[in-house]
Length: 287
Image 1: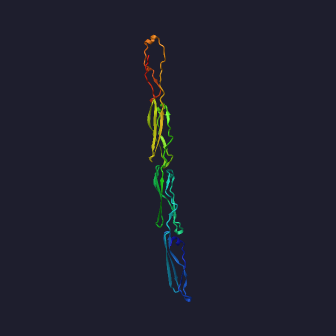
Image 2 (image 1 turned 90 degrees about the horizontal axis):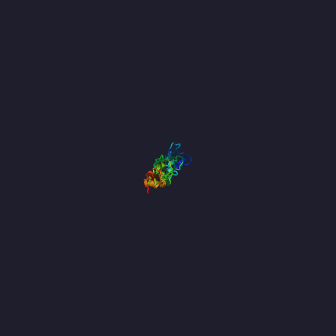
Image 3 (image 1 turned 180 degrees about the vertical axis):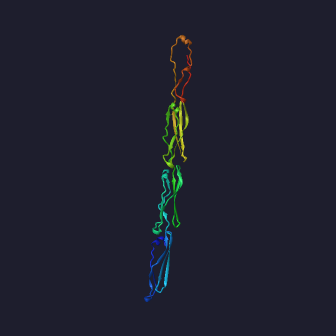
């Protein structure tokens, strides 16, 4: 019989008779004596009925009951495969998984087991598996595996990326390029954060010019972000002569001996340093 049937089985008395009547009759019933046992893994029980009459004659009957294994347990609401964000995976914990065979009493197989996590993930995603395994006392094993696919963390972005700007020549001459920070706003295994230097291209001089600064970052997932700032440099201020001589009136005698000199003592400059300097030109007088 099944384990469930054995659990509710009761032994009944067994009747006997010799088929005679009157003074010759021997009839009645005797209870059965149960021996053996069973559990969720089955078992064997014997029921023995014995009767000894007044003539000291004994009859015996033995019934053997073979009890089958209880139904094997199954996991309850075993989780399906799932896809998670990196942030969700970072806080995910594997829970115990309950099992039961739906029986009661000696035939019941029920409880829960922890999940065993394998695999890994990082900011570029990954795969983890959770395996729950239960082996009952009958040496029957059930297993459930859940596969968790972890998506890559959000791509990083530059923080306060500078806009295009126009500078004076003087400002451009002292301008220095700073590193540009980036982050994806995550934490732990999902964090992508740091800073990168800017690469300068282009040039300028006293007549102005254009420079570009390019910041580039490629993460471990081979995703690239780029920011380019264009710097427009205005021409330096126009130069002016220094102490340029004013118009004068000479006597004829003075004019006769007057010699026009180079204006190299009257230098002109715009007073801006480095690439913006406009200075030291020589001009000649003409009479």
